[in-house]
Image 1 (cartoon, rainbow, N blue to C red):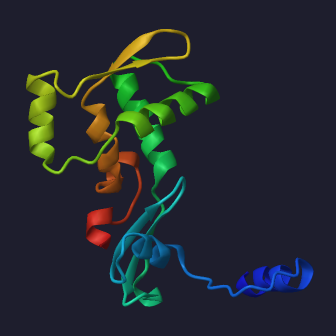
Image 2 (cartoon, rainbow, N blue to C red):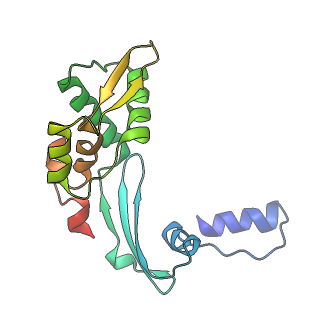
Length: 165
């Protein structure tokens, strides 16, 4: 892919500047002013864990998890249905994705998060659906992201993200 991209740039488009093609994980660290670290790149369908040392990725140590954003959204829909909300159309999937992107997070202390959700309303957030109905999202905010660390909750086999790092 790199060779074809450069051929297109230099030959077909007649671009005559220098080019540095890098792996996304390396560029992510560069953007933070770092050259060494571990980048977790979670997209819609797959999550990659990429170790980088002194500006170079370590291909033999890259890990892939077939669990990512789409799975988290589907799990959020399941959690919200347990609360009594119905999400069942394609448009509802996009609404659930918006809820995920706006409110969901990874809790540092899962037990504390559960306690807060059970004993208080401090985690509750209101979301207005396209039809005007207002729903409350509480513990689902951190429970949905837990699937990244415990894939079995979404019926996936394998290690979670924390085990892969």
